[in-house]
Image (tube, rainbow, N blue to C red; front, top):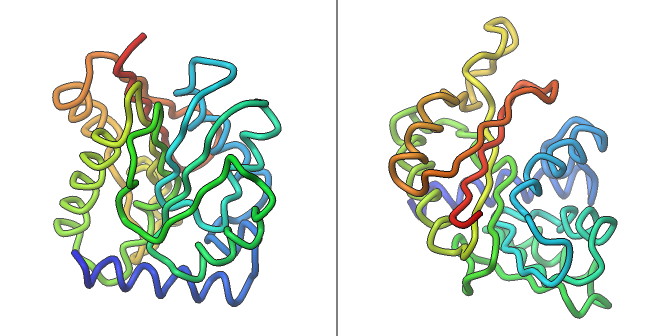
Length: 207
């Protein structure tokens, strides 16, 4: 697992060096698609103010800006395995007392909610079975790091075959929905209707 995380850290550090603090810098195609993903992921939040949130794989912290546009009072904890990403985030949000960042693959504290955006997409040269094990282990991290619920997204196995790329991981949304229902909570939502080749799963521990 350590070698895998090291490879991912290097990959995203290179993206940041090439594209800067932009959606391309965290391997997204556009600002519009990035915001659309944030809209789906944050549907896990069922309170307007006063919540805490862990962002696993936070990159340079773009989710903080989205949360700030929707909520006045919240505490944000960003985690990433890339030292360069965390350095960029700390510099970017140095004047935000409700934003904290750490170089880690697991949030140091339990929050009301935990989210993970895009961290399961790029498997590089890793085999599908190994990557699936990493995905499930990381879902356990999200579960034990959240008090009220967590959310994550994946590229979908329903993508057009001609547009799939070998270094990317395409998950079965139905299988992951079933896995989350059986392992984490009875209250699970699958969002697969927002126009991207991906899906989002919300795991609600409390309604």
